[in-house]
Length: 218
Image (cartoon, rainbow, N blue to C red; front, side, top):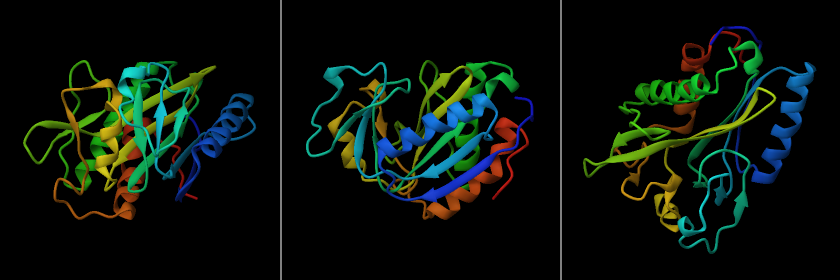
């Protein structure tokens, strides 16, 4: 993608209610489209909850209680958000970046792979699946980063969730992203002792390579 826009970094913020985050993104997307505010990357965590993307199937919600379930306008199916997971909401103007949604999703995956590499995790794509995968403790591929996006008038929102050290048992209440035969893992489950600050630093350091310049720190 062409380096075209200044960029605001927000956060890191902890325990942001999901509805509040969506409200912020909706307002920022409108402002980016109008040209009154810059594109934005927001690093945050959510309280424990499940979100249902636009392709969510009722059969994939196995045991929601006691967690709330929030419908989401992003693509994809069910996922879990909670403490220990870094959520990165990416609000970019694709009108200035080639109007290519596939390239944007590829950029999110590349960004996660590069950031995880700095923490010692070898992440990779899997054919036919969205997101980033790593070999779990049992040697089988497991998802370590989920991608779910929405685009309105070529402005992106929602984005990426990387499992640093969340409660992986929470994923048992859903079929994560609709994939039944592969599990979920985290940086900590792979035996690596990285902090959220380490992950945030890695995300900031690798953003430009994935998306282009304009990523000025606050």
